[in-house]
Length: 204
Image 1 (tube, rainbow, N blue to C red):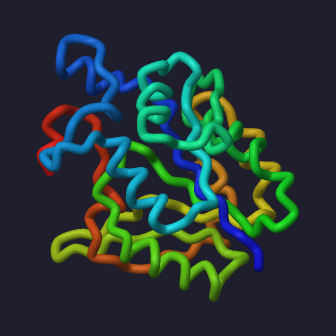
Image 2 (tube, rainbow, N blue to C red; image 1 turned 90 degrees about the vertical axis):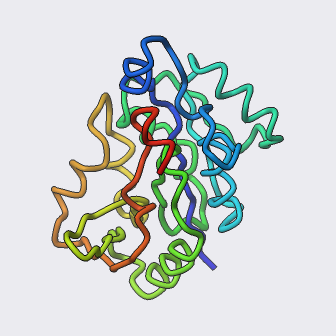
């Protein structure tokens, strides 16, 4: 059976978070009301869903690497890179996994989205099984508005385009280029669109 690799992008610089505090602070290590860090909660959800994952970390983020070590994350699950933006991080993650002969595609997740529900990932898996050649993303359907969210699934056929991304150009450019291949499924999980940008976001 073909497998889907989850790439958890954790290489950001937390600039907005640090600016709000007035000093440098890695938002992934900030604590949620539960007492868990943003990074730990995100990993708990994704690691419960699948063991096929890689965490992409900026080589300069030593505190993140130390946290992963403290959480006993196996070294082979971590991709260390020199990243100038999300495009670099994503491309490194694709390069680290694209030679796997059993690979069906990638599940692109963001490390600063700790409120994603496990049930949403279970539904995602069913959707991928039924539509393996489509780009798939969740659509939060609220009473007032709807918003496309993360994670996003990309089939293996997009490996070359994803692996050539650089700088701040994330997967959005690939989505826009292949809009006809995009499908969404509705969820009532606000965790697909809620991320941590400022300290106030931790209280969600």
